Image 1 (cartoon, rainbow, N blue to C red):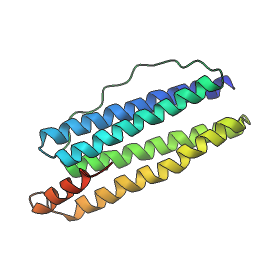
Image 2: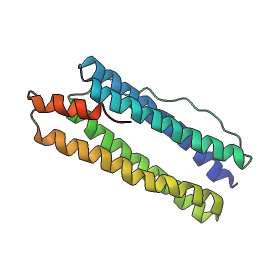
Image 3: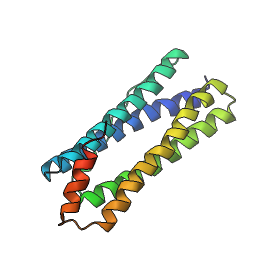
Length: 161
């Protein structure tokens, strides 16, 4: 594997683990705000991000590259509201999409077909990730925070598997 690509994929392992850490911080905020459904959604999202990191970890191992774990930055702990949580979730997912696209483009540039095919799954996954966050944010923008609608949304988000 091209060394620049291997380094970038190692960096993405860290980025995916940061995403998990960020979503756990958001879950903690939601738990503190007595929104267990929101917290459940974020905890589930954190597990998904961990699985993404492990997919890349496994791929690197399968192609004979060493996985090097880097330090993960501290995520923010304070948010203004549930809408702010999902606004920041959407912003973060857009950043991840850009990182994945850069990785995919690099794999194509260095003509690593196996890596490009592997990364195609992540390209597709990011479409879903952005849509999920955008859909919830759209609902949060139209409901009133002090209404029963927030509690209904909380119950709905708590059903995520």
